[in-house]
Image (cartoon, rainbow, N blue to C red; front, side, top):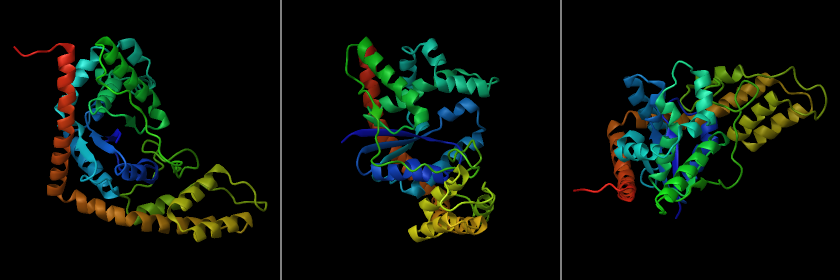
Length: 329
């Protein structure tokens, strides 16, 4: 069985794009592979979060992933900072990472352009820590989006470099995990692009019904079709993509017929869409609240996850230390 590692951002609520994109696949994947899901709280330190925010964000994200179907009895889910072996291997791998190649990464260049007042060493070596997250569990596969392709390539580069320097085969060379079937891309409500945290165009799984209704009713539309069966503009097609995700086939077909016959009323479409999104997210939201209030369950979940993750990580670190030449007197 192949080993798969995937990081989870420790900031922000999950939105419908997350759910229909990665999370549904994670839930399925955990029964097909040896999966490690970790909450990347060390990565978040590059933005200097407040101590209270750091813990609360981890708790919030953990609760949401568990509510969506990640099963701690099946997969290994843990908090990155609970695995000190990651920090030590990160230090060791940094010795074989070169400043020039790190400065050329797209993620670093984007960050320093957006935040020129916070160019810290953690940002520069971000790809090394990300690589170690993968390599310490000797992962064969990593689920990545297009924006993460370069980081996976860096992980492959660091694995090959270590293996070549010491003439060993310690680290498997990780490959992208290929999800079966096409992943659903959920658009935002601003008329273009995908749903995202930074874009402010998302519907979150934790949103209350009134908030969902307000967001959907503000979604971008046009003045309506003027010809029978005319092609939908992107903003309207986006609404139908959302409808496809949460509504029944007959509901989708009804509004498509109304659009094609130039009889559609966008107000009716939005009301139906909001109602269907609320029906879809309400059970998940209730489960999030239930899990988030159960401190004992969360404590037990991360404790067991850390024990499972550390068992494998400590073996990898011991092997790496021995290969490099560290020995006890």
